Amino acid sequence: MTVDPPPGRGDAPPAGDPPTAGRGGRRRDQAVALGWLVAAWLLLWGDVSWGNLLTGLVIGAAVLFFFPLPPVTFGGRLRPGPLLVLAATFVAELVSASVHVAAVALRPGYRPRGAIIAVPLRVRTDLNLALTAEVISLVPGTLILDIDRTRGVLYVHVLDVRGPADLTDSRERVLAVERRIVRAVGSSREVRRLDPGPVERRNHP
Image (cartoon, rainbow, N blue to C red; front, side, top):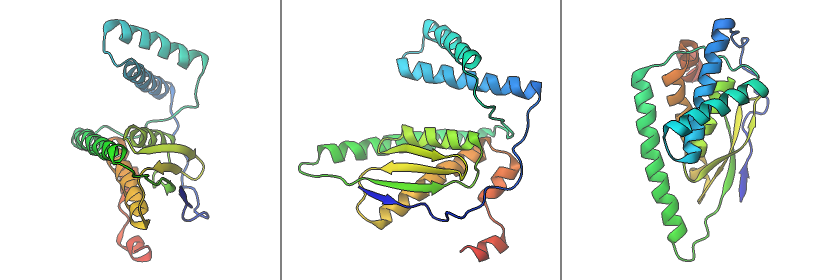
């Protein structure tokens, strides 16, 4: 197993304070969190039924009441087109990665090498870190090992690494997932972070 060190340890955190939420925004954030908890509950059971739905709502509400988490403010907006692209691409990558992992597992005498790569995200909000980490972990062959919340870095274990090109491709896939998520649910300011201007592109080819 190899470890790919994170580039740019001296990177500064993103400028600007995170948006604050009022009472209405806080309730909206809690509703979104409850929705994600219910979805996770249904996925764990693998069965969508009224009983599982009601149980998920009760357990999700109890978790939010007894174990309150730091507020994760949603400052973006849903975009149906990019959201559809995100869902379709996720399904395609899920199928492709499943076939690849199955082929590796069934290949006689082959011992795949793994690696741990550090991927600094460009949008370092808690919501983006969480969503990107969840999507990456759901795809077979990749797993989030750790998250550096301060620097916005994901540490990802990848399977079947044969050379430096595979490390580069894996990092690009993580950044592509981040790009699709931000374009689907991010704010306009966050979307602009994904596409540097002409001056920044010249300074960072």
